[in-house]
Length: 113
Image (cartoon, rainbow, N blue to C red; front, side):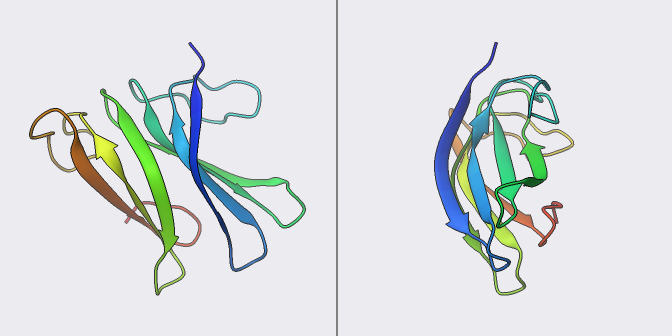
């Protein structure tokens, strides 16, 4: 199954663009990493020339919807969305009900902190 949703985009300090949304697709074509379960947070960072700089996938076995991305004071990013996934490599806690808020902090190259 292939499915991507774009929910947010921001201009980056290096004149690139960061696209933020959710994806359930496996690795193929331009997508580097496959889904961790159902929908995962999915980020696509482009250079000022529109070329892929990096992609990141974060999620668990359930549905993880990334709705918003913003800068942080340390030039990293903060991701805001919802999740019904249980604890996993990407998540520190289980879901407490249907869908909970899920906040993820990233450094400038997109690594999870």
